[in-house]
Length: 247
Image 1 (cartoon, rainbow, N blue to C red):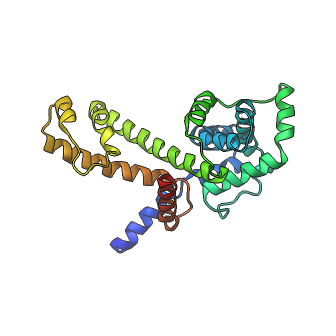
Image 2 (image 1 turned 135 degrees about the vertical axis):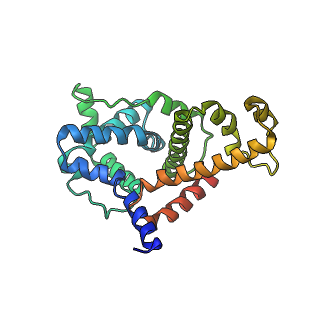
Image 3 (image 1 turned 45 degrees about the vertical axis):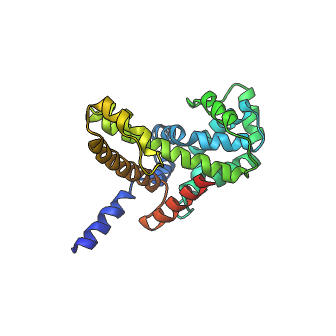
């Protein structure tokens, strides 16, 4: 096997276990396994979905209940029976599924909730509501707003993964001191404060920041890779999410 083929094989293996495979496994697995897999999806992506429902005009309470009920429906055999990996990006699949749910199911979901039979996932809907009301008012279409919240969730998850990485290496203080420079767009950032905090020379801090930014980009790519089917789609999704954030 050539070096190029070996690299391609490694990249392909990175896409074997993605959020798509979790959805498909949930369709085929035992109920308890499905619940566990989809609970993870809830924790990862509830905020963009909740925010989208709010942008569609639902109240905080209704949006919270509908988002919870939507994730419950994902685990139902009849809901997942038609799901396959050729449905497009995971982001697009979730939004299309949510729109279908809102159009056809929300009356029944509300009735079940009022009847006291609804199971609730542990979602921090109050924090989601705080984020929603604190954002500047805009006329963005709900779909674009969803994509922007999705992109922000990707960045938050990538940053959290990076924080865990540094913490595991005993470098939590370094991470917190350097984190502000991840988004510092100035051509000549002042590293003096971080240098004093970490007892390092400014030039050494500059090198550490360069490495941190590289790892952050890699972490973001890893998160995006979890939401597409193949390496061929990764660059397009990366470029799209960056463009959404720039608006």
